[in-house]
Amino acid sequence: MSPAPAPPTPWLLRWQGVLAGHASGPLTSRLPALAGIVLCALMAGLPLVTRGGLSLLILAAGLLWLIWALRTPAGGLGRINGWLMLLLGLAVISTGCSPVPVAAFKGLLKLVSYLGVYALMRELLAEAPQWWNRIVAALLAGQLVSAVLAIRQLYGDTNELASWADPNSVADGTIRVYGPLENPNLLAGYLIPILPIALVALLRWRSWPQRLFAGCALLLGAVALFLSYSRGGWLGMLAALGSLTLLLVLRQTRQWPPLWRRLFPVVLLVAAVAVLVVAVTQVEPLRIRVLSLVAGREDSSNNFRINVWLAAIDMIQARPWLGIGPGNTAFNLVYPLYQQPKFNALSAYSVPLELLVEGGVPYLLAALGLLIASLRAGLAQLKGESTWALPALAALAAIAGLGVQGITDTIFFRPEVQLTGWFCLASLAVSRAQAGADG
Image (tube, rainbow, N blue to C red):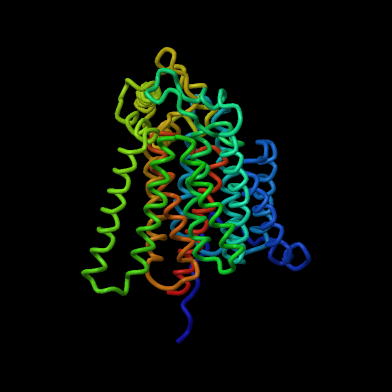
């Protein structure tokens, strides 16, 4: 039987491989190593390098992917990449129709630069899967330094730390650490997707020094996230680690009898809820922060977010189908026209609302399509013995944590957080492609 013909190359990708005839030479053979070094430097430096330094590393990653793409013919687009192309197309349309096109174009360039990093990650992981462990090691190294610096702040001058708690909040006086990121919520958002990756590295790596390194990163990262006293960060950590634990249990018990396979996850969830209830009722700082969640407008942080959300809804109603264009620069120019007095904001403080503001209803629907495609790619790894199973489950749990935090915050759009999200998406895309090849 003759092999099935290869699927035709999408016309959007036909420019790739135009220099394939010149693909031989030292540059081509060294592209994976160069890409890996740049990506490792980028992921390790997320919390430590200045924004200018991160911009240079992001630019270098995009240029490396462009060189790689020109020398390598394109393969299939894939579902995840297809949704990303649709998102990019909608962002271009919203930029062209934006009331502040110059500002929106800056946001579009930022989005394109992040997509360049994602594309390089995907190419590298597909070409040389061993780089997943190396990029994770770099990511954990930067996270470990950040966690140590954050915990160390407890032994320094607490005046500046205490100022992060609003005097009008029910949590007034709470000491919050922020490490090198200068914002407790940003520190929490940075740590959320890394913790499940660290847990999978602890399970996946074989040597004891590697496991000790991953275990320290996991433990200190969780402690630092807790000490940030970020309510969204706590919920995101619970979602990330809880979903990963559940996914690992489902994977490990897939050969059990049907009854026990269904009962064990339920028992595990009930036990976890019981532990949380005891912790909330017995640990006073935890109880105070949890009570602030249900304080409504009586808590100043809640009141601020509610007023920003109402203004964002007004912005969406004014431009429901095209939005104002991508990026915080466009938001900062348009938001003052809708804001309530004394409630200045740099974003919509909710990822779904931010997507609606930037690109309208089609943009949010495309993002949901991308989320569903990512979930399907991760859940497909519950069966089988692919080498990408654990990385895919870690990526899925990281996305779950970021999604929960993103309901009430837009920390995700900061590069320190978003680039880890792109790494998770690249891992899922490669795992999906590998599953298709194996099938």
